[in-house]
Image 1: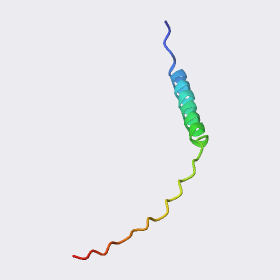
Image 2: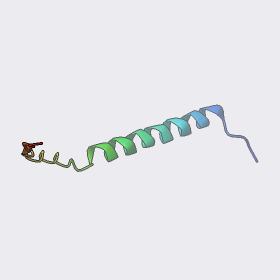
Image 3: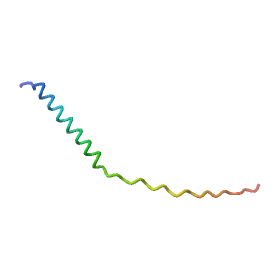
Image 4: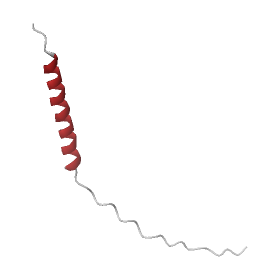
Length: 52
């Protein structure tokens, strides 16, 4: 079985690296941005006046 030439290995590395980068970029930019949840209204704290 013949061995692969070093330039072929370099071509395969460049091909798979570029495919990986393109795949990651496409996944990043196609993600649907969800809106931030609205903050809940501030809770009204009633203070109790204790008579001891």
